[in-house]
Length: 161
Image (cartoon, rainbow, N blue to C red; front, side, top):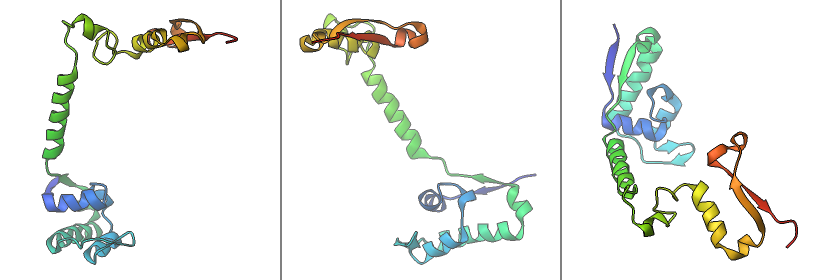
């Protein structure tokens, strides 16, 4: 039977900031320094006394009862902020995703178009539109499958300008 230990937000924030967010990385010397306001030889704000006591009890339990400690299931607080950030990013991506019924103007814009949003299309198109660049290039063609297939292309340069 495994035991659960629910880690409170204040304890978790200390774990995230100083122990890579994991109880396994908890270290007695670092914890002792944090109580005094020291972390990696730098001054920091001392951690809350109750947080220190909780983390110290965890370390003591690990020392006194390693088998019991190994059976504990650590329950970390839900990362509400991360979930909210992921939702915001998803909304932003949906906002910039091109729609299938693109206008002719959008279709020709490599930064907005479905077809030209792919570098395979937009880079050769850009090169062809640049007269100075085309003077240096003999031809542009799709790459063979062994060289990247549809995701790549060859640019053949002229020998002399």
